[in-house]
Length: 152
Image (cartoon, rainbow, N blue to C red; front, side, top):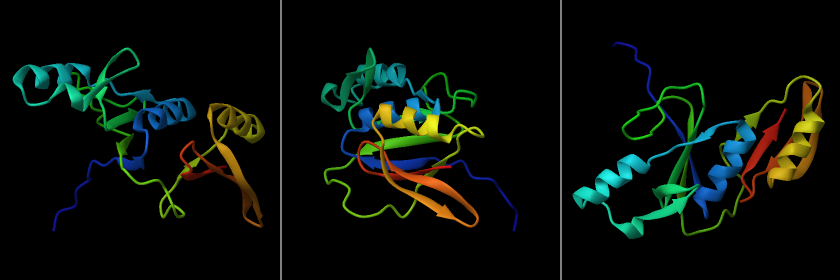
């Protein structure tokens, strides 16, 4: 059997994918993907409809999907789709109700956790609790829709 590396993205369910993408792009220093050229082509071919799109950030975007990508990673210039580290936010009808089974850990530069916590709170995050264990400590936080993440 040959070994291979798979391309992947983390998909996050959201009530408002565009607000979540804006939060996480600002939190991580990522870029919101620009899929407007692809959308315009698909609208022109009749393969997509106007009601599947919204105006977001001054450009046309998918109503129910939007991704953020690492600014140093490659992306497809024809579609705007990232080819590296990315988070995709997809609209779902139900709100979050239980603890995440998968979460994001973000790491502040050494000695800057308090400043990073304040920055994330200003972006819309909240502190759920502070954890101190023999191996270290972190802050359990929630994004604007209540998805847990840890600040180390």
